[in-house]
Length: 424
Image 1 (cartoon, rainbow, N blue to C red):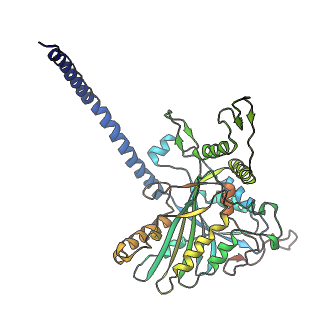
Image 2 (cartoon, rainbow, N blue to C red; image 1 turned 90 degrees about the vertical axis):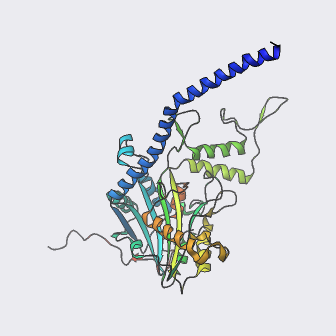
């Protein structure tokens, strides 16, 4: 037998044995792998089922907040309210996976029904008392009305109605903050005539909505917590929002993430040269570090414009909605942009959507999602952004008398307690 034949015989037999053993090993492990796959699929389906069942078992409250004629509180009061409802608890493991409990979420809504502007907070009925007490503690003179859900009276019929809607996201990473009420100087409680409130243009826009038209703004919020598993760990989680913010600051300052030493090391002398920062870079660092000091929320943003076909005015509504979010934008930091997710995606050629079949289907689903206030779980799972309490209080707060929109409902007179010496 030649050397080549011997080599082929020996190593061919070796390869056959290795292949045979590999197949046996794979067959041995297949039940384990199949079980793991089935458990993974079943756990997803099971969680969806128990969460849906838990959601249906709860009652919900729709609270309308009527403002007094004079509101002298700055958005800091609303920020304090958000601290009061910040709850990161998902419940025990048993309650999560057997009962379907989840972190409490709330829907902050600013709506216009034919020009009548209303502030709405939607929540679980069992949390209504906490929401009301937290609001009353910060805003004296407001009225809170537990009303019927306004969305129940609206049933989308494409034969007589048209609808536009979209979701919003951020143009940059969540770690970059938006322009907040502190940047507008509202934390200093200026006199009403000197206030520049970024929410006033939105209220003015909503107050100009005409008959047979409605516009609904919705911010769905829940407390933000560590959201991703740390690489190489099975249970330890990290907060990508905070880590992203620290990474941005480190890059600007040329700072080592471990030693926290800022600057560039000189190759000759070995001395660390401190970085030279521009005014814009200093502003970014200051804004991010202030942002990190506040509690944060996962937020989903939706807007819906719905009207009768004969009065549907897309340029007015779309232009007004887009302009409403520009007050929170800065070139160096962050801003809002539409992310789709609704009928706004169908603005192309007629042949892309024959007789608006797809648009009407998406419109029905979009308004259904809005009514159910779904965002964080299937079947209405979106991609939330992260806003801290300061940012959230900027986009949703109660304005003072600087908002003179006629359609904004206010309490007609100031309430006070009766004097103690009244005759009985």
